[in-house]
Length: 102
View 1: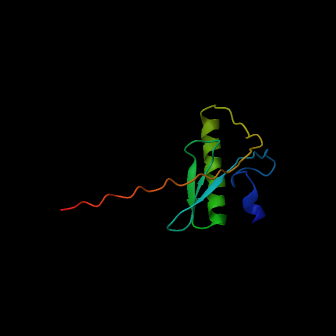
View 2: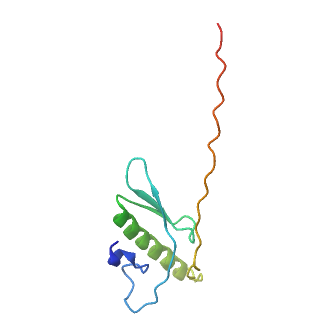
View 3: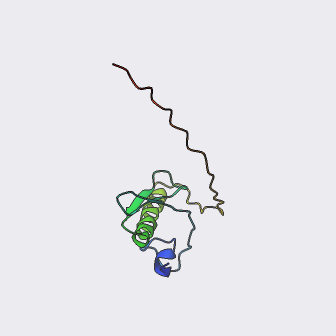
């Protein structure tokens, strides 16, 4: 993983500014690339052609979201330590279609 991209601070932030931490979720797309969602910020969704670009785009999108919060005098909070898990569920069985007799 590229350490430059691993930072959660947007590229336009000054180095001495506090860095905030947010969870991002990568969803592989059938046509290629990755959609990235940020659960802490509903609607903060972006896309990248590969993981590195997707992560870079997420950093930029979060930076824009934070700038909007600041502009509207909304609180900027860091995310607490997330706990993410997965579950498996059984796929519903397809019912056999009755053949229509003509």
